Image (cartoon, rainbow, N blue to C red; front, side, top):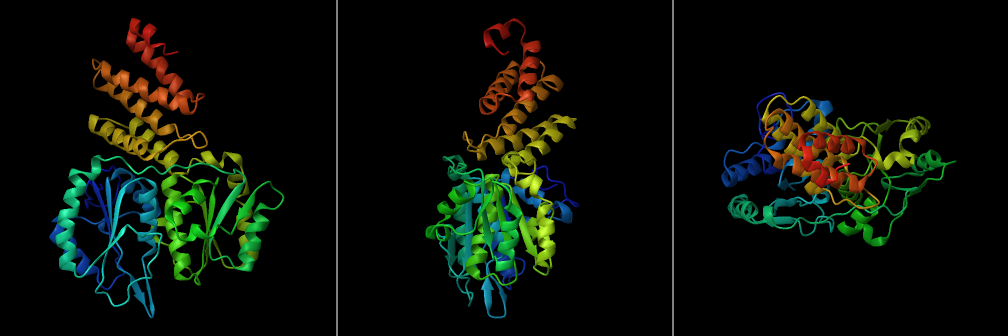
Length: 410
């Protein structure tokens, strides 16, 4: 397991319950970073050391970030020839963490000869140090501050507000042929791709959040010839889409090394010839060019909610239900629901978990029923037609006896 996060892996490697730590294992300074982290934080398992099934990496990464309270990311560059760039996985994890409202910090030691190109997208979240010793000393203080203060302060509110249901944004390297294939993907429908954004959307993180959060879905194109600016935007934007719960389609030119974080994600089109790309995109028309895409079952919050539902249905001990409750509580803490983006499932799931605890383990604890009622009503305020909540409230009636007349549960 990954710590207490309920993420199944193939060995006993663990991650801390409160801190998600991710490093660049392709950096020449990987060992220096590991030593600095150990000096600052003690014996600490790192995300990259947790063994994961290849087809589950996307899900494991998402669950781990959702369940943590703080995120610490290694911004050491990967140096290849003359290029010096941030690890794409680190950028995706940054975008995901930001959108989920997590406390996130990127760290870099400035003694490295070729630092990655600075980007306004991570400005304010990247701290540079003169040495690995200085990094270790500061982390001791910084993580203590996080533990005592930041965990308890108001979360950053990142809200998704749909602006135009029939528009989808396209990010990344789009050659004329790729652009034509994407335009043909939407041709004959009411949907329109948006390739060009306002000037500040490339330089301001909040502008990128508004752009992504305002679309029904996004398309991310990855090719070998992406420049550093494009890489920053594509991977941070992709992380934002994950964290905001925005469905997305990845278009990848064969030969491009896809970031590890995306392994196991289902909506990836890999192509070699543009004629094949058009055919493959056509197979996604029914899924993506559909008003129901905003409630796609594979989007972040709905996927994790369904995973939590499975935890409840298979629970045999109170610890199993603890796991489900922690997940749903983390989700409800991360979501800023809106009329244009109602996400009722995590609230309903939390109601189900509380009701299951009452039935199976604490039949005299009426407080569980009161809390379950609150969660069901919150979910119904977002989606009045949610059958599972109505059924849950009927179950509450059966257990509350005469008190139900006062509750007006039905």
